[in-house]
Length: 313
Image 1 (cartoon, one colour):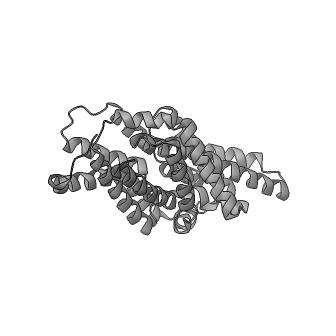
Image 2 (tube, one colour):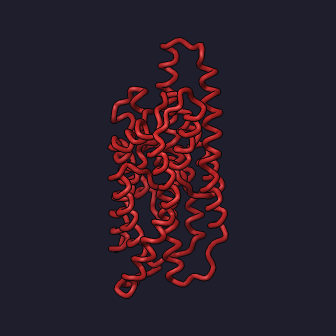
Image 3 (cartoon, one colour):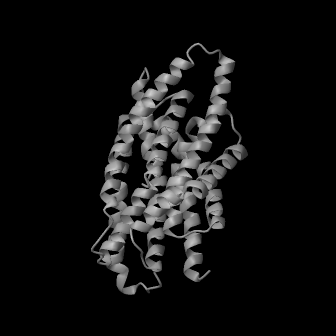
């Protein structure tokens, strides 16, 4: 492994840890807590899910990464540094950030600065799905929540507790699997990672996910108040929509579809307890993730390009 490859791995480890920290509420936001998991069980479940998802299904979004075009290795390093900065900043203020949207935005900025005339037509298709997928998740999760509540309406407390415990564990694994297949698979394809390197990233993603106390509070208290069944419905619904996008070979945001699912659950619940101010910030973060990724990389390249040493594609 050359120096550039080694730096890629080091920066990817930092990025994937921050990614887990930022997006960790998807795993921890009420699921592990409501089911009474200890740290080790939850971390192993997340790490195993991400690892298996990336290895078994990651080829779908990895193939999309290859359609965007190639970039100089040093540009790839710059892209990682900027992603780390963005994730750190968003995590400090407890706002979720889409790694796929900001990453694709940065990648397109590189291609434009390099004067690439033909950019994959799949990008416009990807943008369309980024817009509509949260709304699909909203409806699907609301329907799922209604169905589960009716199914469990007459169940006794002990049976309900067992159902929540088992469902939460399965949902954590399923969501982690889908995250690996879509998001981590996309990154693995962009940087041509080996199985061993993917395994390392899975470990650090799980470590970050279960240090996500601030983000979990933001989703669990600052955005919407729902019970365990509501959280399971939202996360399961969002992950299912993301799985469909994975099979369509489209990298997308797990947090975006899960937030859409949470909003759907909130609308299907009574009373509805929304924190509208925080909801506005969440929606704004959806809109600006791609734009921030694009703008920061574009401006950085305009300023730094004369000083960046070129390496092999």
